[in-house]
Amino acid sequence: MLTNLINREDPDHIGTKLGGQLRTDAFGTTYILCYAAAAALINTPYALIHGAYGATVNGIASSAVDAKVVVAHAAVATGSYGWFAMRGLHDVVITTSATATDGDAIKIHTLGVPISDATPNIADFEPDTWAVALEAKGAGTAVTIKCFIMDREIVYAAT
Image (tube, rainbow, N blue to C red):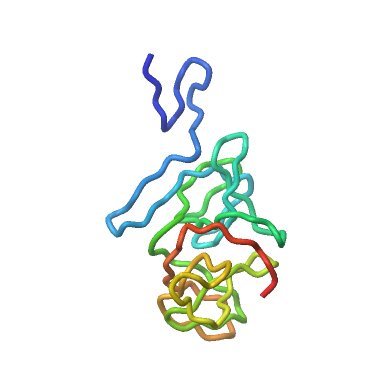
């Protein structure tokens, strides 16, 4: 019997999607299909975890937790599936007070918001960096900037 791996359509799982499918766009950005345990906002980072429906995202809320960071490609309703960027070029909303210049390392603050640590990402060794800023951002308002997501596991910690 053949099984449709995208929709997991076999006699026991009719119409149930399989989180974890990957796709790559024309720019080389890799996306993963994830189940949203809570609503996900466009261009916002989330922790990638494994849940009952395969690859799952939820809001980043705790510190000192190891996880990969994925970024919502479009808004995803609670209990739905959507594509999340896990490596490559993507827009990311950076928090209000953070500033960034081209090449700055992007980390996650304990409040679950992406910030720049204002330290250049030198040779991909900056600890807990999950993305690199590709343009500048001033303080004062939350702004979406272009970043390169590195598909690395990080530890959420205060910066």
